[in-house]
Image 1: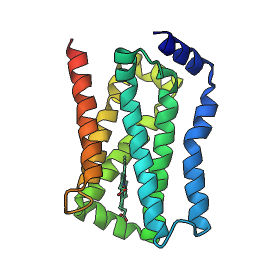
Image 2: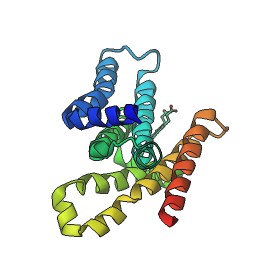
Image 3: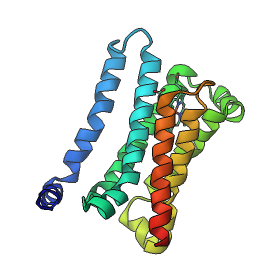
Image 4: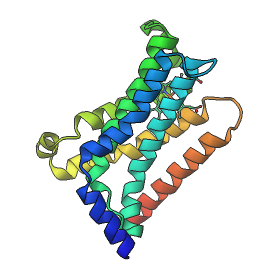
Length: 199
Ligand code: HEM
């Protein structure tokens, strides 16, 4: 009880820009390492995958904020928007590394991939939905849409997480443990949201 109170007190004191800096730093390091050839034998793939995974972790963390508050009384709601914006930055870098470094900015190839490769389709749909959530993550949008509609719109984060799980699961033709773990976590958090909404 005292520990959670102390933790919540600490979170209230930490400015959001500090959290922002901490969350952004792995992407800065990875981008630096990419351009300085420090990412091993296949730097583009390592960069693309690491950035994608970090983006997915942040999406999972956003979904964890409500259960943490409800079940453990740990309040990170103050940082929700910042998590969302930084997650979007990671997904932008992930997408750009694919478009620029893999496809050489060939947008025809991109369209072909979106239409032909289901994992790219799901990734793209999730990324576009993240764009909508990011541009509406401000007080002006809350005022314009009304809090109720805004909250409904931002429930899209669950759809994004499902799309991201499918993207990850369909990436390889064989069953891999990591995408299964991520997908199970998404399902558990979604299930929690549904039952807590009903009760
Ligand atoms: C919310 C959106 C997205 C999330 C959370 C996400 C996440 C991920 C993750 C976790 C991986 C696998 C990393 C690993 O194997 O360790 C991955 C791989 C990949 N993603 Fe995404 N992604 C998203 C959107 C996109 C988009 C929009 C594109 C491109 C249009 C894309 C292209 C790729 C590619 C090409 C790979 C395979 C990289 C390789 O093995 O060479 N992703 N993504």
